[in-house]
Amino acid sequence: MDHQSLEMGLVHLLRAVTVEFDLLGAEFAARHGLHPTDVRALIHLLDAERTGARTTPGRLGEQLRLNSAGTTALVDRLERLGLVRRSRDTADRRRVLLEVEEKAVELGWSFFGPVIGEVVGVAEGFDPGELETVRRFLTSVLESVPRARGEAS
Image (cartoon, rainbow, N blue to C red; front, side):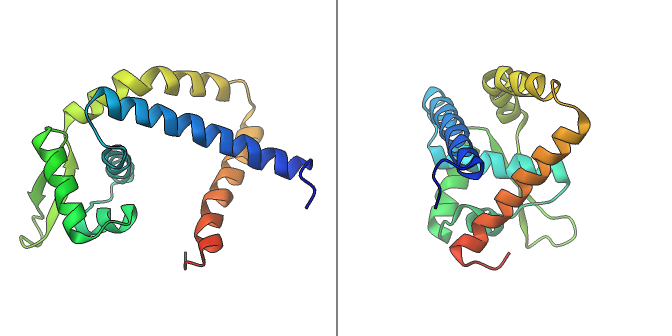
């Protein structure tokens, strides 16, 4: 494999961006007394909320690859910190749903807002066609990870 190819250059850049975002997440977690898994859980919940999806503890555990006990401990911790709340599904009262509290959103924006602003500013320097290419590339990369793991997507 040619380690100097344009494609490999993209792999290395993507890895560098991933490392930087991971370090930001770790810094956020440390500042707020959270575990890195707590931050990943909040991201999953916020992403679900943004798309209108409703998340159960079981679904969150699957996404984070946690067992039931680990998921319960995680949700208990986030609930104690006032970042997440459990609620009953109005259509099926047996089902528990997770919702992100406003406190979590405010904490996230206070820390990540400047970074998001910088990224949006960078994106504004690209034309719509270029942005669509970047979106298509990143989406394809994201979809490739489960395939590389041998998972059904």
